[in-house]
Amino acid sequence: MKNIIQKVSYAHFEGDGEEGTLTVKVETKTTNIYVQTVDGEYRGSLGCWITTDTDPEDIDFDDYPDIDFDAVIKSAEQFAESLLDYDNLIDNPNYYNKQTSPYQRRFENK
Image (tube, rainbow, N blue to C red; front, side, top):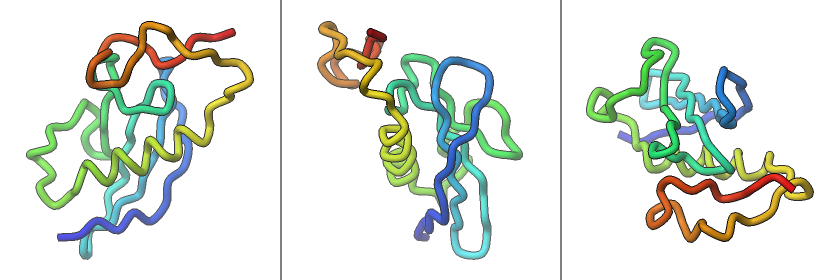
């Protein structure tokens, strides 16, 4: 089955991460998916969750076999990246990439 990402918008929930809200349509079913990001990236190691309207806890991808979460995460990250205020951020010298620096934030505040 193929995801059709209908829209990506901003939602704010408690915590200091950004949140991308994606409305994902899979064939005839539509699901709102909330992807929490930090510094424009989905980072499970920094406490980011993916939730839905019906599943308010961090979801198990296996419970949603019809959804391509790689595509969902990529869309959320692209949207979150567009919201970053680079004028107030500097690169974190301890960050290399999200795979090799799983517990480091990408940016620091100026």
